[in-house]
Image (tube, rainbow, N blue to C red):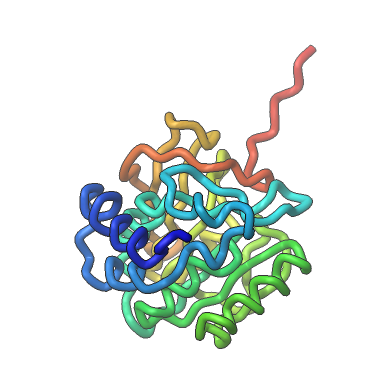
Length: 222
């Protein structure tokens, strides 16, 4: 039987700390939240691997538990503060939302699949995060009814600018997403809102599954 608490401590010490993740709140939260609880039974042993793990099938590409070091480092750069409002797009059944709530944020999840949304609600309640709201709608449509958000975390890669999500940011709000086709040439990037403009910068190389709603349409070829 796997001692998941021990494996989780090893993840913090050997994956997070060695990947320039120094925020004590993030390290503590990720040491407390059981990643294996958000993985399928047959794949729980892989919940702490450094590869993206599929956790649910959807019509728009599925949901994945991203490597802890990618999620943790991007979350650190988002500078999520207690009392801030956060939106998670295409969540891995609520894992990221539980971590963010441990940091004191008020969290909403945007999920396009009703069955996955319901499974997410069950897991959130089981892990003390029943107050997290799960909204069902197109991932690329944003969440304007409950906007604005101080922080938006996109759990996957995007080839196109997620404008509807950016429009849901509050002033000085931050959006974190992996920009590119999802391969190792992609970059975790941070967008910051200032009025009607959005500055952006690449932070680090990161591979993650591409979210189909944010796929670049191929040009017409004669």
